[in-house]
Amino acid sequence: NYSTGFILLVSSANQTRWHDIAQQQTWTGGRGNYCFIDTATAKEIELIGGKESTKAFKYVGGVPRLCNQGYRAAKDLVDGAIKESEILEVTQKLASLNDSPPPGVKTYPGLLGHFVPTNCFRNRFKICFASPYIAQQMSTKLEASSNQELQDLLRRLLVIRKARSIAGWIWEPLLSKKIKSEAAEIIIVGSLLPMEDSSSIATLFQSSTSKIDSIYFNDLNDFCAKAKPYLETEGDISVFAKAKSDNFAAMDAILIIRRGDKLTIAALQLTVAEKYHPVLQSVMIEFVKKCRSFGDNVVPQLWFLQPEKVLP
Image (cartoon, rainbow, N blue to C red; front, side):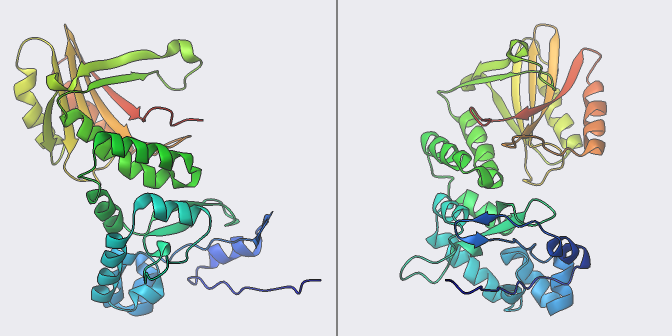
């Protein structure tokens, strides 16, 4: 016989969240019942600890006890964890619900990644980086990796279904790195959505990377100014335009393709999502208007770009 154990879960004082949790239909696994609580929002952190804690939120995310240490201590703690940890190791441990530190190490996986509830009962979750700062710094660590190393890492992360968000941070720099390389072939195949069957799949773009020009833009006006010289030339062109900001709304990059008389300008949304990916409609409307300004023969499109074998 085993005695019954109880765990008190403490979260931010959000009545709606607690109502859902109180009604949860918990599942029973080999190690018991689990309930994953939302981390605190920036506003909640400010109410708990004031402006100083809000500064720390940028680094450690919505964990009140870490934010209340102050932003300098929080940043030092996170920077130490980033230095000592690898993305795959952190993700694998969190996916197995293991948040313990390795022997002799003070940091632990939960400093870098958080469980984010994915249903109202809070008994399902996905793994996300604890903050945009951590995501950016972990991605920066990978800049020296080869294309093959990034591909292998992406492939292993995609196997961990709850880590799709983290895999997305690998996919974007991998594509940019491939396009900048001189000895690669880029092939993009796809279909209009919703896709009825595989017969609708066609090659949308194919080119050697040596024939693809690259530009960077701050906003859509900047994109138009930098794209104009290419569009005024004669003949076929392939231009990969990358947004300078990782948080640019609605799109990660833009691909300009001219083959003969057909000019396609495709907004690229890089994703590893299995079902859907949100798009900011207002930015896409502005994008279409900007494209139309280049002439009547322009075909503006939105492509959801995924790596190979991302779907089951």
